[in-house]
Length: 356
Ligand code: KG4
Ligand code: ZN
Image 1 (cartoon, rainbow, N blue to C red):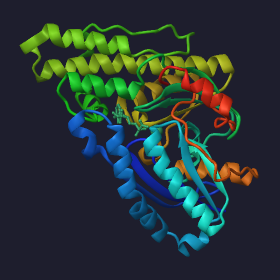
Image 2 (image 1 turned 180 degrees about the vertical axis):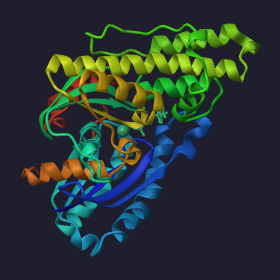
Image 3 (image 1 turned 90 degrees about the horizontal axis):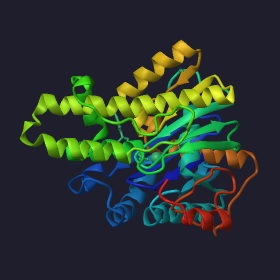
Image 4 (image 1 turned 180 degrees about the horizontal axis):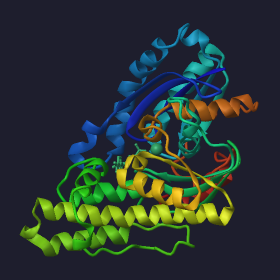
């Protein structure tokens, strides 16, 4: 079964065609990073407008890579939340139009489920995990731990109380004058810095607690930068990056391994844009080897926002006989995962919760 996936929840307009067993036939991602860079973060209105301009060319390009084009497609999957409402609506409207005009089944996909199942995309010959596994999802919008028992049985074990890890990387990079998006720049400088020269807090460091908090650490960096003033030359900035990254990474990995231990699960998956972080990969590799936990880190193209993961997650729902109708709506926040994320009650509850 070939499924067309569409993703427009944040600042990437993406379309992909994937088979139900994870073969990636075509995968197109149009990034808006340059558009938002001058503002130091994603501007929702600009994102929605850019999605509107990009969606048709991106879909055309994705379908051009498929023998038989649209005629070969057997289902349409689209991210319908969580994300920016105006941005999500563009992808959902496009998906509905294609499903209606071609009489194809339509399913909405939770963006987070897409990230959690992205490890099954067959982009390389690397082995994939069997269920159950613990997943650490770390991106610009989300930081959470899950136990993934099947493609539809997913339990959230803990999440951030405030900033997502990627958001903290981006804000710290901004404070240090490194530009946007900051994660890769902090990562690069951290490799040359000495973390022992800068004392920063490790918030909610207790391993037993599976919740995260990064805003205090970010504030500590802001205070450090203000106090350092003109003494903050490049080597000094690298030291700050090293100390900040070390504290974020050690909290993430320690809690992920604590979740593995508590659930008696010996498989850990890292996913989301921050999974590209070299410090995170190295520490996870080292501690997983020491503790006998198998580690899976999907290739970068599967970790960052893409539509292949949405097509794959949607294909699992379609194969299971699930369908959404043209009344499919979007939602901006969802605290809990599962097949019924779009239920009115879930949306009502989630709308009252703080940012995930
Ligand atoms: O998953 P993603 O592409 O988009 C969503 O937020 O959904 O993640 C983007 C985030 C940004 O905050 C970016 O700074 C961060 O991932 N990131 C990194 C690295 N590469 C990307 N953070 C730390 N180290 C990196 N090497
Ligand atoms: Zn994402």
